[in-house]
Length: 408
Ligand SMILES: [Zn+2]
Ligand SMILES: [Zn+2]
Image (tube, rainbow, N blue to C red; front, side):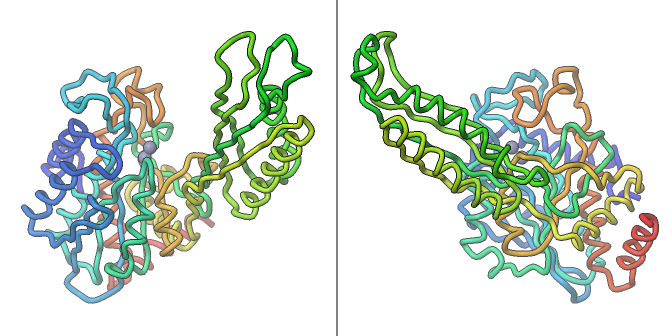
């Protein structure tokens, strides 16, 4: 039974916060109004909180009535550099910025859970509510960890949640292992020798070299990675030349690399370097590769994933908790938190949205909108997780046991 019911006063309040956040989107590490808004709600409900980790980050803390373990619950708070194309009353008031990944919903749901648990703190232990900046770029999660998140607020386990548009509203998906991929950015510079396009024997053509590299890179995943493992190499930028009769001096290429297993990542990076080096050598050109590390893979521990699945099952029933969805090749900086503290990250179904255009779109689309109808369920999931994990009267083990039995 969800702690927070649809259309309850709690739900309506969470939705009103969500709409304010949607109207005031701010980019990574610039979430100043957002941070003030979160702090003002925490202050109004007399919830202890610490500001300033990773700049705009906030950690709120609620202690239960008895001693026990400590868990961390995390929401990301930043928006994207997109011009919103929705026309509803809560559309973005910040030109060129938009909550198109539903972080407005994540923030409002975690605030809702904090307010509920402040008023119903009959649990044994401590909960840290982590409002994290800059998930979309530059890794606010990494910065919070580097600035001492887990030294200041030690946690036995850490949990995250993302809304997921292709999943039906009222459902969850929980992965036992990999959820989201690791991402690195490739920057390649090919230097040849420019000249007249009618006299190609006098030049070293960096465009032909770049074309051969682009094609050869597609053999890395298909021929150097086991078919049972996953990786993606996509070349997404090729910049060169200005005129039809000039072969340019150089080509600049960019691309993205994705994988789950760090051994696969290392192997692929080594092969990319070799392909560039030897293709350039064959053509007489010079190649330079820079690999900019992005986010590591988001990998759940099975024990914590099972706890999440049990809490979700208690709310919506076993059939509405998918346990076999493939992971996403998208990336998520919750991975930095998971690398520092064991835990799990789950998806909550966002459903089809309110109109046809929203129904068709994925995260980061200019028509995207978090679904208010799932706000009570998402907040209730946090409450359920806390009550199940930080409970001295065996409710946790009962839920887990019934879930494991149901699975058998
Ligand atoms: Zn996003
Ligand atoms: Zn997101």
